[in-house]
Image (cartoon, rainbow, N blue to C red; front, top):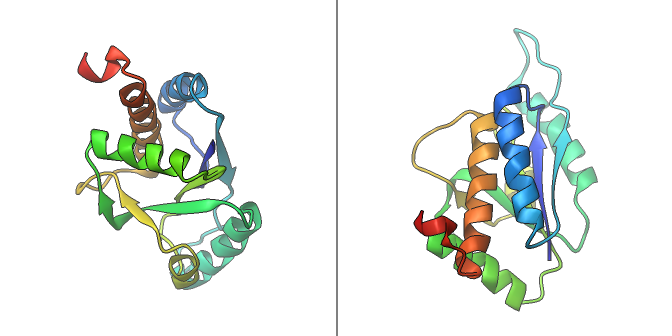
Length: 157
């Protein structure tokens, strides 16, 4: 199963980017994994959030393949423990999912069209984090999930 993390916006924190890339390499030991970035909509002081989300929606849709299973990383999503997330990944593997895409939205979140098109949602925490932090935390949790599934001691260390 191939996994992609699709993110709206750049990663402009080099220290988090380095840590994130370390986890990307670790996950790649278990499965193909990549991070793709979509440029966020240009915003001005009086930019309309709905127009921004509409522009970002077009860019997101263009990066999704018809066979991708897409899960939105969203505050309204289902919450998992690390073990529960590992089990969810295992279930997707068992079901024969070939391409799993996790999506991080832009500053204003997702459009209604994205919510309608991709109804699966997952929440990383009840707390709110910056998008750069979410990317790093997701990569760490994905790596943790694979170590749990493969009885690697990382989860218990």
